[in-house]
Amino acid sequence: MRARVFVTLKPSVFDPQGRTIQEALHTLGYAGVQDVRQGKYFELELAAGSADQARTLAAEVADKLLANPVIESYRVEVD
Amino acid sequence: MKFAIVVFPGSNRDHDAWHVVTSVLGQSAELLYHKETDLKGADAVILPGGFSYGDYLRTGAIARFSPVMGAVRRFADRGGPVIGICNGFQILCEAHLLPGALARNRSLSFICQPVTVRVERADVSFTCASHEGQLLRIPVKHGEGRYVASEDELDAIERRGQVLLRYVDERGEPTDAANPNGSMRSIAGVANERFNVFGMMPHPEHAVEDALGGSDGLRIFESIVLARFSVSKSAEESATR
Image (cartoon, rainbow over all chains, first blue to last red; front, side):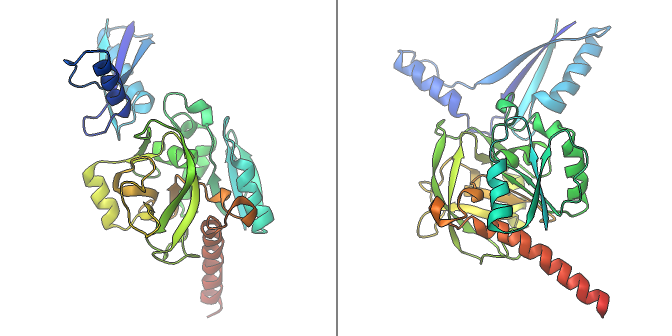
């Protein structure tokens, strides 16, 4: 089963990459882009019997390694 | 005194740490490969600078799971002194042996320059060879050195006096301009609650001799040695009383 994990910086953490991208977009004329936050995307191919099992396993993996709980949060989607 | 210097794949300041410990301080050192599970009788552990695992995923995120880190954690739990420099600091934070995290520099640039740090307290093992308020000139070389923690955690860290080094200007003021990477509260080095684990982003091992442009960094290593021999001395005194 495939799980997708989206990892983003917590809102309270300054994101200089997101800010730089936003400013670059403004330079390109996209004044309507009010904020950009950059994150990470992981695709996990899991040996799991059900979507719930896959979700649990993906969350465990995210908690343990994919996200740093001090500065990042994540969400999981399962196909 | 014997120092164990852990070498992860991608560590590159291990030999500089070796040089300080052996040639400059005259102590003994052993390079410990990250797969070792025994610290071989070390009295202190150094996690050196570098790019362990190529900084893949996050700096220090994978190194914290190296086999050697189990032994490092047990050593730290027993009160053994552990110092993480730059990538070593990042690894200690990822391993939750230190609070907070290190994020990308706010300028997005890799900063390689000397900075001034102020010693916030000199009554703990990593700064006892200096004095409170002393200014040290030490180089930083990093792309991800911005110290981050929640406001509550930062308040607690400050209240407990865990900040040992802070970025300051030449007058000793923690101004924004003096902060090379945007670290919160200008924190350059922080210890755990027991004060036996310490992480700092600047490279003290690169400021230990006049040939390197200064020897302010030596204070940190001298402190570790001084603390060790003070402990041994007072243990001796208690035993003979």
